[in-house]
Structure formats: structure tokens, C-alpha cells
Length: 408
Image (cartoon, rainbow, N blue to C red):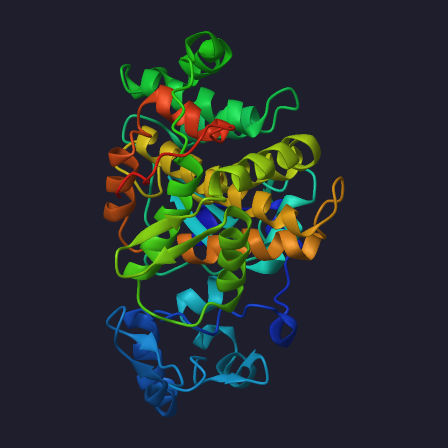
């Protein structure tokens, strides 16, 4: 069956090799790596000794983790013991493919990659055109591969629309914020026409979107609500060790002069918070924004790629999916802004520190199993409306904070 399909992967993946024991945030820790029924049956038939490594929890079949370390019980000196002793055929789909994200688009099987993996962040955000597609080395595909091809489009038409969004994001004359805003406005326009007309209409919608961008409706608490949103999602998720994310959060608390009240599920601002953010924003505009735009636009392009936007990802339609990408972008950008407070004026944080911020947030956000809470917060804060979305993407500027943040 595979011989009848086209298997392609992004450029960043073709350079990827697992770092194993050298990885600073192994995927073999903290996650319930799922197993399909086919893999469990393979163990039962050919390697029954591996059945002891299977339990249930986040899914019907997952790899068991050590209660003390939270590592998979088959992790041995930084490497998978099943992989070493039995080969990749005995790895479950989750373990075999991570950090790959594999989706079917009609006759094409497209592999992208998650920024949850530190090595993918290195390969994707500091190299030209990481999302360019080529023939894939990988020949195995997941057992439960979902086809995201809309009924009214063929594979080439659907992929052309996807590629138009990516190419627009990577334009050198646009900022990531402008490209996201134009994409949101264009997604609204696409919803009003037949999908068969998307490939012809989308370039026009994007080209003329700047004339339809409303004046920004800025709320002074937007940046703080982004951090609050992240903290609420973490507080509501299953407890596990997240040292790199904790490091990122501590940077953000310190830079913004806030703390998170886990009982009230709210960021608590201080008398210094407004001035701290004004200083943070000023430093970002002077030293960080322009220098990091190429990396930030590749971040967005990777999100479009891994979600096969506008067809997949969280959200029920293209506009919801785009807004969730925009919110994740703003949270990640805020993490990078806060990181800059630790370095002298004019000095960018080292690449490894930037990788830690990007990857630690992605590792958590990529694996939200249910977007309901996130979407409800986005709607509650008004970020589904274009004026509010633009205000949030602009960063809140230097406006005095109210006495209390908006409740989420």
C-alpha cells in the first residue's frame, strides 16, 4: 500500500538524529507513551517478556514509568532498551515517530516535526526553509494514520493552500505578527467561500489583508494574561516533573515581578509589574524583536507545518486553529522577552537559552489533549476578535496595569 503513496518529510527532519543520552529533555521521561493494539499484539506473540513494561493511564496501553524517576522503565543509560535489543519494529508508534508528526493528505503522507524536541528546535529555527519538503527516509507509517484531505479538494490543491500560508509567513518583508494577523483575516474570508475556490482566492485575500486590519484594541493586562493562561493550563494538567519549563516560568515571574497563586489560579501582580513590563517591552523593541524575527517566523512556519494548517490541529475551523497558533506564539515570544532581562543591553541570549524557552513551552503546549479550556480562555479574553488579536500581538505596549487582572 505504501508504494502507491508519496512519503515526504520536511528538511529539518532529514537532518534529525536522536541525541539519546545527550538530550537535555528526553521524551522518555514524563510522558505516557502510547502503544497501539498492533504493537501490544506483536509483544504478546513475539516478545511476551515486554508485556510487563505496559500499563494503562493516559491511554489504554502506555509504557510504564518508574515511580521514582518518571522515566520509562525501558530507558537504559539514556537509550531505549527495546530499540537496542529488539529493533524499531518493536517500538510503539509514539516512541518510534517522535518528534515526527505524520499526517495523510490524500495520496501524500507528510512528516513534520514537533518543537517539543530540543534537537528539532536547533535544526528548524536557525536554518533556512526548515519546512521545505523532500522525499522521506522513513518508510514506516503509523498504524492509525488519519487522512485530512477535504472531500472537495484533491491532494495537490489542498497542499497548495497549505503551502501558500507557509510561504506568506516566511516573507522577508513581513513580521511574524503581521503575517499571523493577515492569515487570521484571510481565514475569516475563506470561511465564506467554497473550498474549491480557496487556492485562487487565498493569495488575493493575503495580499489585501493589510487594508482590512483594524486598529488594535490593546488591553494593558494582555501580556500578564498570556502568562496566566499558561500557568492555569499547567495547574490543571497531570502533575509531573518539568524542570526546563519551571526554569522558563521562573524567568517570566522575575522579569514581570509577579507570582502565580495556584489556589486562585491567577497571576498576582505587584507595584513593580507595570514598570517591569514597560522596561521589558522597551528592551525587546530595541534589541530583540528585529534580531529574532527570522527565528520567530520559522517558529510560526513550523506550527503551520506540524498542524498541516489549515486542515488539522486544535480547533474546529481554520480561524480557531490560527488563533491558537497566535496565542502560543505570543506566549513563546513573552518567554523570550523575559529571558533577555538576564543579559546586558544589546546582547542576545545564547542559542541554548533560547532553545530551552521555545522547547519547554512547546513540550507542554504540544501535548494538551483537550483544547476546550484553552479555547474558552481565548474567547473569554476577546482574542477571537481581530482588533483584540492585533492588540495582543502588539504586546500591550506601555500602558498602566489595572488593579486586578482579568479573571480567566
